[in-house]
Image (tube, rainbow, N blue to C red; front, top):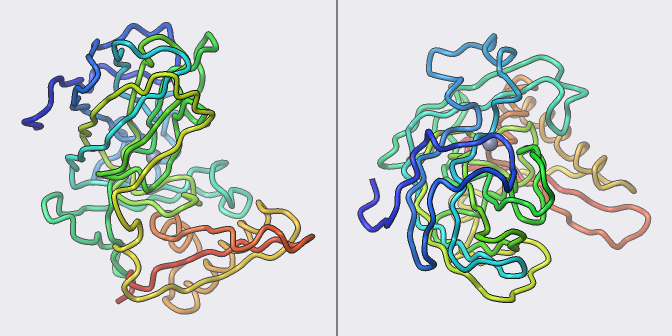
Length: 314
Ligand SMILES: [Zn+2]
């Protein structure tokens, strides 16, 4: 539990859509630290006994539950909510799935696939990926955001200017996130905790893992922030950098196609170098490889690169 937290929001207080008519679970004063019991993105659907058949049984109306909302006193439209990410309480279990119809290469990976992970929640040592390698962990919350001003229930899948399913892997402990407030009280919720993810989350899932989260809230009056922004506490890839990277590219006039090519080329390379099946390589790329735009000016062709950390196989 969290000894310096002022409030606890229990996991029963979760919801499956962003909607400013959902009554707040708690009303907190700025400066408070709040402990959120989160569910994983599958709402507990997967366990260590799960098989690939359970991927097809996943109910898409019950994904990405978020815990909340909380009402922050004094937050008004036009302000920014400043969220200091204090820390995570990991569970030790995680899953990664290829869900048919979802993911950057959904047209190439039409069958469900599932990887289960066990990790040491105390040491947070790199997690074994079957017999192939081990993935450094760095927890964060994939879904973190505020209720939009627009009435009605909005899906938890797409992120918005008020945040939501941002899936930014650098929103780790120590990072300070600023979100634009659109409704009184901001109405903040959080969930979809991840033990590790690469930039891009290419297969559509990370190491999805139930965790609890401690966050501190402050209000920046009149910030008029257009989109989310954040400040990291230090280097963001120290956990991956030590052995360098294998890098593949996608070159062409469309960034999305470039991203797809860069990832496909990495899947082929990991198969050649380490004997991974294509879908294993795809899931592994999603949890630890990074998509980057290398150049976006040398018209008409842009370069998207995919960085795979060699430390996974050391
Ligand atoms: Zn997730």
